[in-house]
Image 1 (cartoon, helix red, strand yellow):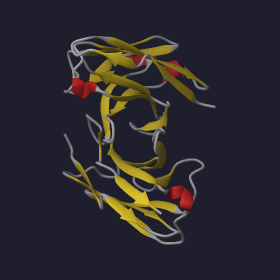
Image 2 (tube, chains in turn purple, orange):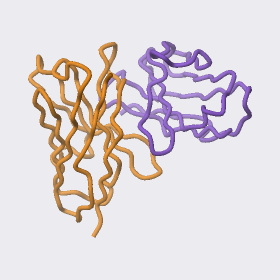
Image 3 (cartoon, rainbow over the protein chains, first blue to last red):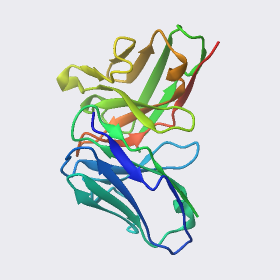
Image 4 (tube, each protein chain N blue to C red):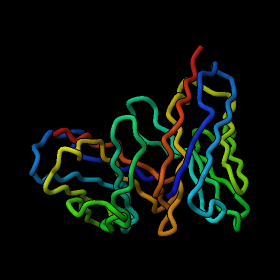
Length: 106
Length: 119
């Protein structure tokens, strides 16, 4: 199975900041990568698919990039409601796999 | 509005069985692949299995960790997850999630149902 490694595992930032989370795949996955936001006690919400395509109704302060093995999720400017855990997902092949998550505290 | 509602979670003893259900509305359920994804307490997300759409006979795929113990069944209205020979490591919130029409990823998730395996 393809392994996804996110960094950092957690971060603390202030409103208005620019934060970047990285996701590295153990093998090339083209742009078959998605990003999710999960708040405590809630289901994950899709933010970005195809590495850089914003899902419907997702604010434009979220952006994604990368291809192959290295990907980024950037939030700028950071808002208080962005406090959550963020996961990357590869859907290049079975089984789809998730990164371990990055907790963003504000 | 797309809605997915899971039910059936609860406390079960090791070695026991449980059936989870997912009720869908707001979209043509039979057109979509559907997944089960779980999350152990305080942990990350793990894909459990998939049911393809009606055109593909609702055929299934499973994660290695559950293959042979879990079975996904589905009709035009509901998807079920039959879980057998449960172990403590199966304790998790189980989510029903729709597979998108624009790629093999999940675009909508239910609120989840908690399964606790403990004696």
